[in-house]
Image (cartoon, one colour):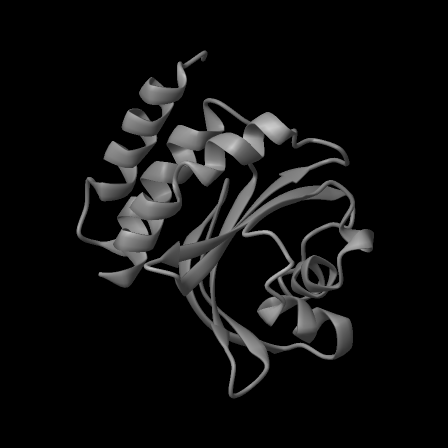
Length: 163
């Protein structure tokens, strides 16, 4: 399905904001995003600075939609990346072996190393709210255009998560 930028934003935002239940909003947005880009798994994480860890609270895939309470401690470069202002808020990782955070999370979530990911740090009023990882099976699946479109969804996702 082909969308203009404004139609994409409107369509996905309606799916994100169309429910007061986070689980439903994430499932609907997952299903809608699958229509326009590669997507096999979506995971919602919070950064826990006191633990130096990511706290995964929800996962949506082709087979499941489930809440989690998974704390993943990070060390070294992976931990430093979470607070580094030089790391972009939206990044493409088409080979998870090149990114220590994505590599660790893929291992913990039992995701194949043969995947591609786009990560969005959700930011509202200069404050990090959470992050969402979008993962597709296969290497090199995401483009700059995918990342640009997903970056448009920062505010709708951040507001949904914050509520």
